[in-house]
Length: 244
Ligand SMILES: Nc1ncnc2c1ncn2[C@@H]1O[C@H](COP(=O)(O)OP(=O)(O)O)[C@@H](O)[C@H]1O
Ligand SMILES: [Mg+2]
Image 1: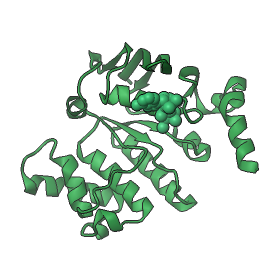
Image 2: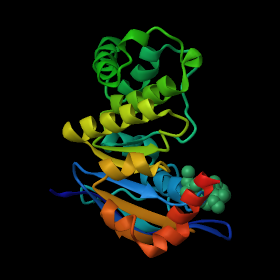
Image 3: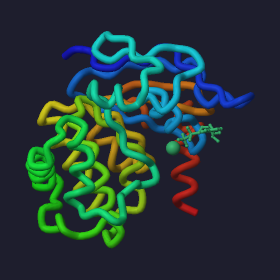
């Protein structure tokens, strides 16, 4: 396996607030890596720096060995990195099919080709029967499916999912887990931000833990769940919160 993405010493400041501090990690091609940590740890900020929504204050991002730091989002997306948003951005006035086609238009100006690409992705994501439904009338799980489908339509090599399982029931979570595994099988690399440990532990090859902007641990899921610092900063609180 070869390295697909490398984040090197990323720091991102918003005024005096340090949202990411000296964060480094890398992703092997064709793996699933999850980024976890408490709210405000800097996970979404890291996604934004990687995907080119804004440049990091310092540090570098390499994709297939190429320095992509500070490149604009559309260029990074064209190179093969796509992310979904924590707050779903389904286009309400468009059908499911049209929503997905907006992703496909990154690589083609042809409506017919975009429609064909959307068709394949709707099959994969279980949306075919809903292709003519308007985005605004979808249930939450289908909105999330559309969000992932639209990201897939841009033909990414790296797909970054930001809390796409929040608000889903057990069966729906299982569906998304299986979709992630299918995508890895088809050759994709995934970077996932998620709070639902039961969902990410079984599917992740590695876990990276952020706390207060800094990376505090990285490793195999089975080692992360037993890591004292991670339990103290995140897992312990989480489970306590859940049992309240
Ligand atoms: N655009 C922004 N401007 C100012 N502060 C921000 C901005 N984005 C995030 N932050 C702050 O950065 C910190 C990390 O936020 P975020 O990356 O969203 O955390 P997470 O996704 O881990 O919950 C938080 O304190 C948040 O308030
Ligand atoms: Mg976030």
